[in-house]
Image (cartoon, rainbow, N blue to C red; front, top):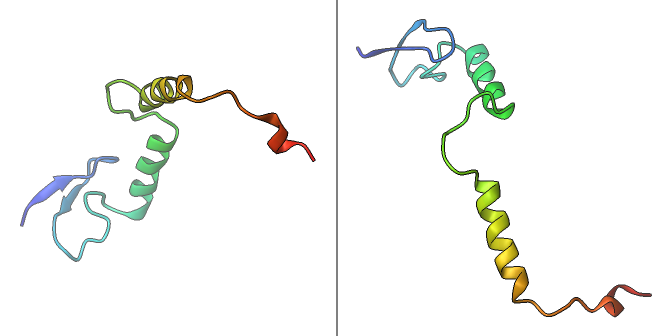
Length: 74
């Protein structure tokens, strides 16, 4: 049976269908890892998607006509 190290605590984990937490050893380690991604302690190197999207929105906005504020007046 293939064994891998838990990404959080490095415990050996059997890679089998019955292990619902794989590649983690338990739900606690899975949640710790999720929290690290959510807090941006873990990141994937490269250009920020936010920067890329902001540039695309700015480019798109230049092509729009000026906003008509009368639509928002009551």
